Image (cartoon, rainbow over all chains, first blue to last red; front, side, top):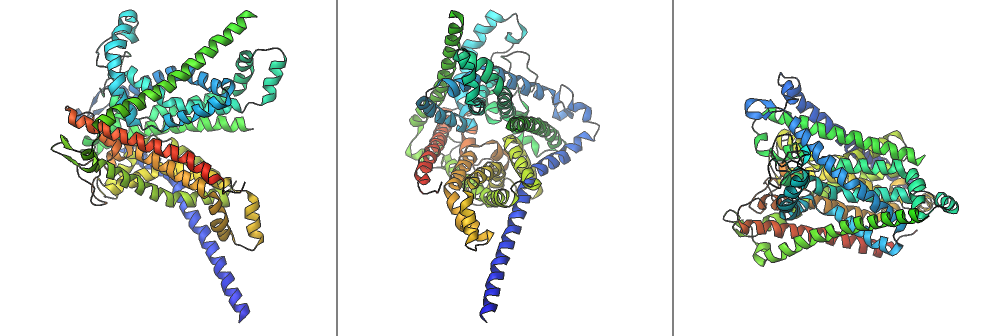
Length: 312
Length: 280
């Protein structure tokens, strides 16, 4: 009787244990399938337009859904412009900030600045958008655009075609701030991971601190900093709400910093009303979403490969 | 000799300038939002839904909607993220499947939020046929929160020292008993942190709910009704031509900032307080 009891209880414990493992496995499988299902479902929807004769219009320059022409080029151009400006503005200063935090700042200062950078990262993007509408857009419209274009107007990208403030420059600037926290925190981590001995060797040879940072630490951390920049790029590339609020949403490829534009993300987010209307419209948007997704996935994998290589 | 000292000084000045600039921008953003927010905040703003095309009333619809959306999404994400994290950390470890899971979660966390919104719209709103609804919004937000939460919980689990597991096995406990009674208890502060971070992420995202829960001037009364949310209140009301509606955008962004800052502070306090009870 007693042994039967132990058998029973033990087997019940064993059963619960096995059951638990199966449940975990199934949930983990579901979580693991999400990315793939996003790609597949977007592909499935995109195939409607990709297999129809309208496919040529995808690569064209005109976005006129009412005429059945779904050219994504203006939006792609908008995304590239905005992202490039964000990176040009953000990368140098972010690397400087990361070096400052990792190498120069005293411990106490670092531990006060780092929480602030975390807060910067957690501010919702609509709040960035609101702030930009209140501050940056008027600033660009009333001061930066007139002054820069009168001084540098002979360079095509500084020419003033329309002056609304809602522009490539305003979006790029706000994106630059939004990607700063991720670039800074990853780059700082990478720089701090450079072994102390390397620095000491350089200092012992008579190099100044800055020379050590420039020639030794930066060189060792270079790949990691590239990974940080790539992660920042992905964030800027996929950012939606802030860009939707300040890019101006004009479906034309911009030719100057002060032109309004409409990045891919803003195209998707902005065409909610039309989406119900026709499957071909949804399909064109799927192509846009797929484009966004694939670029971000490829660059993310690249950044991860770099980090993996560093780990060795 | 002089030159290299000069170079160092120049770069140091540049570093400090860019650091001050960035912190300055942060303070500027917070100051702008707080100044505008406080001046447009009132009791009726907090306890009334909008009336008369957003000319009167408040933003109770968005406040409640956001809480429903973010809590529901966090709950759904948790039911997926916790088992996934346990599987990856306790069972999978270095197997191919666990590696694939980590990779796919990391990739998922890099997916642009508007793609989640579009995906949620296609799946939940069109295919499953929930329509524009609170539930569709929750599910979409849950997918967005999933990778962040799963990876943070996994981190918390991986901090639990192996000796504790071994001690539990040595006492004859099964894996299930060890995980529930020892590992999860030890990792509880970390898990709580993960949940809070995900909640903050969920409440501040607008693009995923733009397509799925959309917006409505009414307080959500059912899971299948459209629902407003704070980020979308900011987005929609700021484009109104009259100031009484724009005041709602300021108030909504103020509330959002307060929530996000409060969660940030709470995380710091919590992690300090809880660390005392955790075996290291």
